[in-house]
Length: 237
Figure 1 (spheres, rainbow, N blue to C red):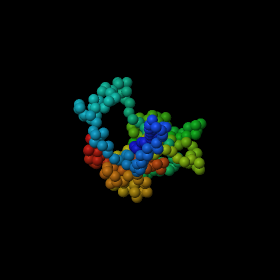
Figure 2 (figure 1 turned 45 degrees about the vertical axis):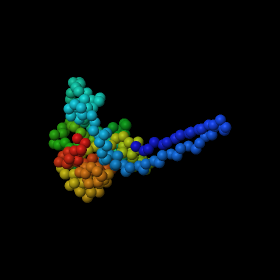
Figure 3 (figure 1 turned 135 degrees about the horizontal axis):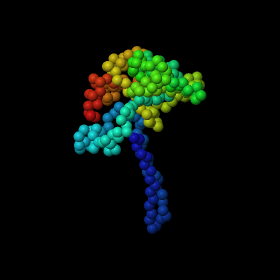
Figure 4 (figure 1 turned 90 degrees about the horizontal axis):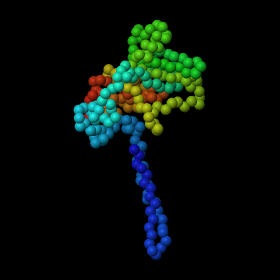
């Protein structure tokens, strides 16, 4: 989004004098980098956001090039099961996701030969989890929308370890996960009392009624409620 640099080397000639190189054209000024969240929260211009809706809803395949109208029957039964984060210190991360976010530890897997552990967390009823550890693994992998925290042993005590990239600084890639709450304002009041770091509070920026917080490793979590999310995104709908 930064302005492209302008470069030119012009030359002129006349019968009476040799070719002479003129000074390069001045570089166009670089625009100041917007605050990092501005890239997330601002609306696109109407001309860009309003994709062609020549037939049916915005979500119709005709309005979304590349979207298949018919789903391959071979994918029946597929579902989104997990998102993996690498974490520096599982003690700190488990405290955050259980105490602050209210998640439960569904399953822990340890791999001593490769020196790493996996922690699967989610909003499931642990009373339904099998007592047998192998069966519990299968049960865990049958739950939707879990997070998988990966701990490479030793990072928590390594003074040289600088942490992981959260995807929201250059080069940008991964952005965030999202958690639905009963009331975004009440949830954020609680997060503030607990000392949670905010990227965006509910009334910051143009998109009122949603928030972004950080986990201990700096990963972003979007916070929203079902009573407001439709209104928040109405102009984009």
